[in-house]
Length: 131
Image (cartoon, rainbow, N blue to C red):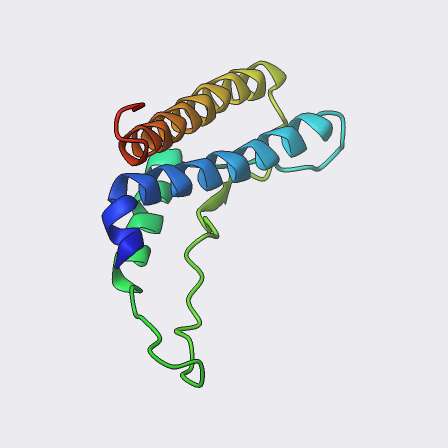
């Protein structure tokens, strides 16, 4: 109950956005590392689609365990799971991958800045406006 008062849905969205950006960064850097690998198929994920699916699955799986002997839901909502391959005959385009990396960096930095501002607002509220 307390965490739902302090940490609203915005914190959950920012948390999931950071996870999706982190996974996308892993895929993009893997593509860049394999730029000269023959037969390597580049992979990516759609940030908006993956974040939307992560938010839908977290809204569905909000069961509370009232006793430690209860079974969990078994659902993991932190894994993106929307990885797609760009094509079997397609080689890694280094210019496109660097563009994707810069775009992903902006998304990650924006999400982390929003999360820091939200936490600073909570801190400000706790200290009663700096009194």
